[in-house]
Amino acid sequence: MPAKQKEEIKSRLRVKLKSYDNKVIDNSTRQIVEIGLRSGVSIVGPIPLPTEIHKYTVNRSSFIHKNAREQFEMRIHKRLIEVLDPNQKFVDALRDLTLPAGVEIEIKTT
Image (tube, rainbow, N blue to C red):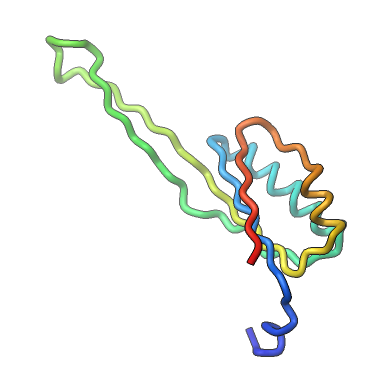
């Protein structure tokens, strides 16, 4: 960015979403982007962040069959949305937003 544009940006909101289901998180990001467009703020994103994969290996049997194992994994999908110069209308709409169960939202100001 040129130096002029850096001076113009006063504040920035970073909205980070996490979920186990990628369809639910995509719908939630779409809702936040639509709120931003209606409020008239400039939005960067949604940026898909790397998916966390937690793998667990469990014995099927308790004692005798050590080689019989099951593997499970949990995938945590993440998205990042940056809002440049948020106005009060956007912040109020974001506060009143109801997200589906299973979506974690984290908002940081920079």
